[in-house]
Image 1 (cartoon, chains in turn red, orange):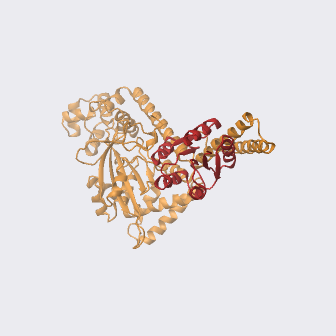
Image 2: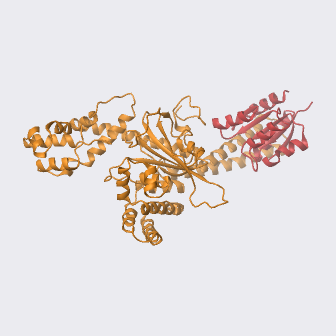
Length: 122
Length: 446
């Protein structure tokens, strides 16, 4: 069965590359550039098997979205967090909030596909 | 306080004039044993005794107690304080400066250089961590590199792209390359503008800091003017001081956006100078054994004002401990900072959470004291108190400000009960303390 992935990323060229790669790898992908609409997408177009989540997003940060996911109905949804800030503090914050995987930019295509595949258990 | 080399100078003058200790002591009206202690820098020669000795030796008190040596010995004491395991007999450093001044100068200048390097590390770390421009552009650069790497990889590895897809990712590489060039140019210009000089101001806060540091946080013109205005109505006095401030700011280099901040700072300094005129305040402080609550009662003002005034006594002709000051709001944002040479205070927040200035916020109006020890070993006494922001009215959201007065243990005038020193740092980023329960981020020094 095709796995569904929500990508929350506001950089259009990164988002487009991720969508292409994941679609090519056999995933069903939904893109959302606005942090403020990520939870709506999960509710409207779910269920999803994993979320790829940037930290710095318009309207709502990735940390805020992750916090809501973990305190609501998506406590166990696998989340891969992408950060352009490789600081240890960001990684620790993400881990404290319950992130499943954390990856710093710039990442390779193979790394991100491998991580999402692993998260979806496929 | 640090003794000067006055004793060594008296001994040299005595011998050169052919006096015996007994004869000079007799001429100065003191006992030979006391003169012996003075000559070996074990007792300070001040006031009438110094005058009598100078008179007997046919010289002046100024010649016997020069300020430069005092500065040298003070620096040597600061250097020695960095080595907590080093035990020195009283007078060792004074003897060193007296018998081997070249070695003493070498030690002092090496220590000064070490302090400058520490200051550079602190300033650059502060900037790298908190500079919003740098942070935003580094973030932008990493995102751009990610997009280029991903698109280039797709173009290189995928051989079944449609013409539209091929075109799409080629365009992506092109767009992001242009963006990367633009970010790189901006960063290059920014870094060349800032150079490697951490003292070069880039933000209004840094400009204000540089303006105040150059003047040692002291404004004699305001103190002198305030002293002449003691007996006239306060509003008129403030108005006159405001004119002095305008003249001072008009004479300075371009403060740019920091002009308003500098005026606010000087307005508060002027207000303190009116409430606590310099010379009477200095005398009161000595009479009160530097006790801030006593001074607050004497001058009918609050502890924050007393802290500020104590920290403004830094001048060569005033015999006072060197106090540092840190004022923050409840979020930890530094509102006022006067660091000590060996106690750095961050410009942008993220100070050590173990400083009592933060503890004070949990018990407003209560003066708390703590003994602190930095990782290099030097001990400090800190007094802290949190007070509501002055001028708040009924119904306004309470806004607490917390201030911390710091003084090196070598210089501390406070008679506080002995207590264990609390290990602290300047901020997590540049703190080498290990196993700290309050660590919030990794140390650059780890």
